[in-house]
Image (spheres, rainbow, N blue to C red):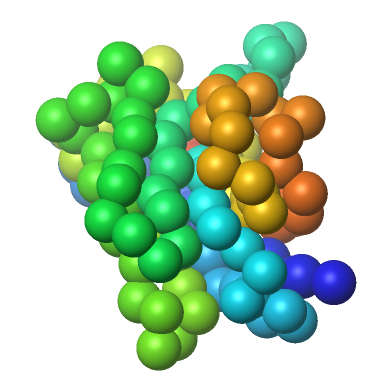
Length: 124
């Protein structure tokens, strides 16, 4: 069993930045990848980006490339999503998720465990 706990969301003005954290507990050594997703009202959950738990590979959805950065601190079992140049269309509930396989990063069905989500609201 793996538990994920997001934090760091809130209200931010357009053009601002915010960093989300995802603390992993339970059996983090089973993870091979961590992903971030977001879901805006009335929309499907979409992939934002991901990072390998032990390697250096990161992957990002096109709309966030150059604005968002994913990193991890294995000693703290924590993954971060640094978001910059935020726009109102980035408003959503952000979720972190863990996956045992390194298959399709984009599909939420590939992920085994999910956090409860944290709201990010970007005002114009």
